[in-house]
Length: 117
Image 1 (spheres, rainbow, N blue to C red):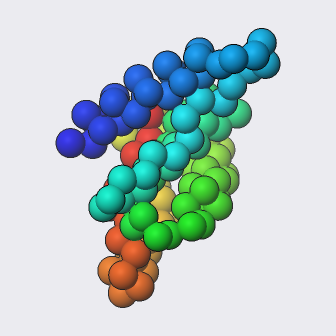
Image 2: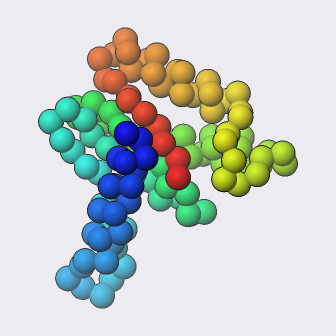
């Protein structure tokens, strides 16, 4: 499901980035809202795309996803043993995933997944 959701959102992102009424550049779709969830996308300066799903009433997903990228860039990209396109084995990122899920479980704002492409 994660790959299908990421692929679908990437397709929508690409289409909306190219469809614009002016000659200005467009950032594409960044938020997809549905009845049961909200999907946020974050395009990093390095080209990495982060996707985060959460409860539709949760308003701070954009701030959370940019903080996650800061942790990713500090603890993963600066790690001399990490190779691009390899699974991330970093205690801080693992802790973040558990913390987000734990906090979400008790605050009724369920984060379903964090995806990195």
